[in-house]
Structures are given as structure tokens and as C-alpha cells.
Image 1 (spheres, rainbow, N blue to C red):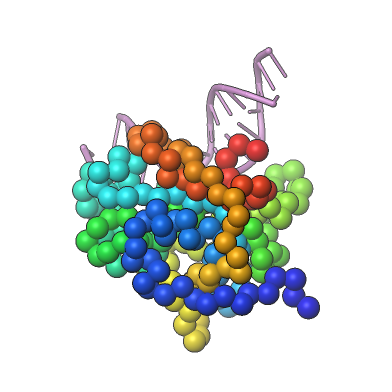
Image 2: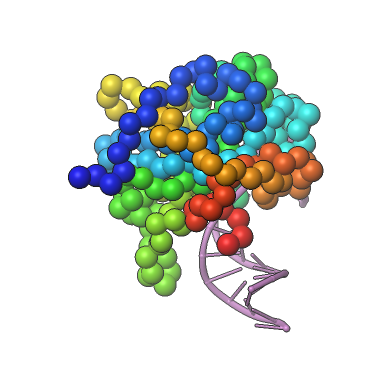
Length: 209
DNA sequence: CGTTCGATGCACT
DNA sequence: GTGCATCGAACGT
């Protein structure tokens, strides 16, 4: 019997077409799923950040629209995936409405399904030690790598197709009981806004241990 | 424990 | 040329 049963409904487009902070809050406890030929991987979202509009100095759209940040201006419920620091893909969910650039960055998951697939995607550490379960999807770069989500998924809607490669999000069985809000991590500007939310007590939450 | 720093590629100025 | 919505190894205390 599988330890981690998924029974959620796929979140519809309307879920994402709301104020970004509401979407961010409601994504905590939801389940991100990727299905491809390698198998199914999924995890409970426990750490998110909101990036809201051109007036948000930390948002990629703060200096207007460019080819790279175009997906932020696109329809809600689609992926905005970008490459940074020369080696990491980061996964966002576009929110609000077409023409208004906003998204939620997914920063950490508690693995539910496919932990062995996730570990093989992460690769082996230099010292050969096994990555702990709660570290496999801890941090936005690690999460994208472990889930097999990358630039090829940029602009794609979070929809479960009947066949083939699909990325989608399901609602969780229960909302997290204790959520905390802090400034966002790793940014230089906009640090006054407490737009990072995380599930208190989860070992998979990113940042300092 | 803590902090620093190199890796690594590219969009944008 | 500069600066990343990062990560983890290396170093200092």
C-alpha cells in the first residue's frame, strides 16, 4: 500500500486568478505533481513567495516587460520557469490576470511520491551520503531538479493531461494549521515586504536550519 | 556552531 | 560588464 495517497482535485484556472497573496497562502498544503515517462513525483508545498507587479522591486517585472519575464504577464495558472545562477531552474505559478505580472515561487516540498526518482535526479553528493527525505525538495533550485521541472515547462498550464508529460497542482487534504510570513529570501530589494509564507514545523522549509 | 565564497550561464544595461 | 528569487563546500571561531 502506498504511504502517500493523493485524493485531491486538480486546482482549476480560477484558483490562480485571485490576489497573489491569497493564492500563495492557499498553495501551502497543496500538492505539486509531475508525471512523465520516468514516473510520478509529488510533494506537499510548504514554502512559497509572492512576487506582485511592476511596483514590487523584487519582481522580475520591476523594470518592465522583457522576453524573459513575458510569462509573468501571461494567463494565470501557467508556469513561469527561469534559469538563474548559471545552474538552477526556479518554478513559479502565474497568478492574477493576463497583463498583470505576478506569480508565486515554490520554494520547498515535503516529498510524497517518487522519492527514489527525485534522489536519482538530484544526483549523488560529493561525500556519497544519502540526501535526507526532507532535504530532497528543500530550496527552489533543489525542488525543480528533484521534480524534473525545468525550462521546457515554461509557460505551460498546470493541467493534468490524459497522456504524456504533465505538471499540475492538487488541493491538500487539510490546510496547514500554522503558517508564518517573513521577508523573501535571497533578494536585495523589497525586503520590507513579508511575502514569504511557510508551514511552521516542517523540516522541509528552506532557509537556515 | 558561524560566515564566506566559488561554481556556472545568461539576460539585460 | 554586472548581477542574479541558489547551493554546498570550505573555512573561521
